[in-house]
Length: 106
Image (cartoon, rainbow, N blue to C red; front, side, top):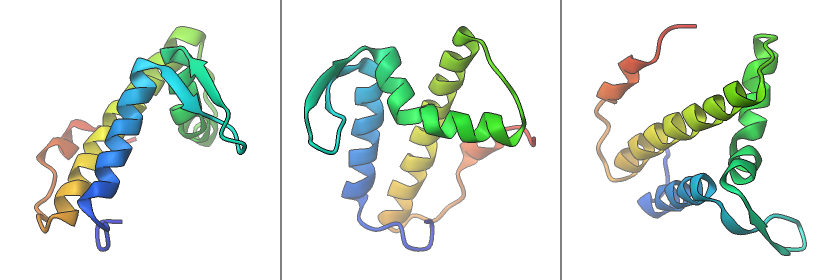
């Protein structure tokens, strides 16, 4: 999405949704937009669980509950990092992300 990141406001919404998932709260979680109150853990699972499942499945890994929560938190932090970069791209700043080097090669 670097080539066509859209407007910065899109990335602001993503950052807010990530923050809300980390804090928990009331969400519209169904196709019928029925609000539900979720704990931070449940909100993180809802927002980042599918990404975790894809990643774990790709490498055929299983986790315990604590390790999964740590993975969800890491996915949130990495998601925020890439979102901030795409927001900069949307504003015309295409410099490489200096924080990208924090990730080891798999």
